[in-house]
Length: 112
Ligand code: 5GP
Ligand code: ZN
Image 1 (cartoon, rainbow, N blue to C red):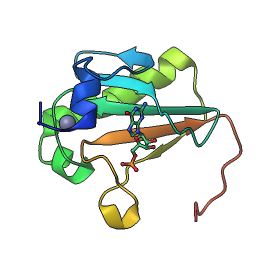
Image 2: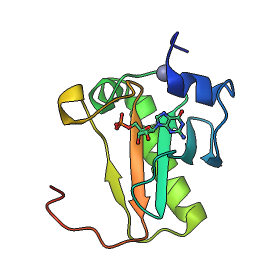
Image 3: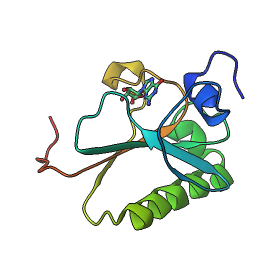
């Protein structure tokens, strides 16, 4: 748990969230500013700052991928987009690794 980390506080239940999925390593909840009909954030229970940081912790990284899979299975998502913003320059605002899982509308490529 990192002091002043919004997502650590959500994992700890100190900030309310709409839980969608949970397992041993991950917690997943609805984004409060959804960009698609389904917009879920999958976060590691352990505080890591971004996906590059998580890559240095193979157990946590594998747990995060397993969490995305578990969420997709539970919610019956077949087509979904997974986004990891890394760095303020591309819009990361919360420095606790999180996968945006987006689904339910057409999505172009490249994303723009
Ligand atoms: P980032 O821009 O860092 O990739 O994504 C952070 C995401 O977290 C944003 O989409 C934002 O809407 C969401 N978010 C930030 N604070 C909260 C919160 O307190 N509750 C929920 N549910 N989502 C949050
Ligand atoms: Zn954190």
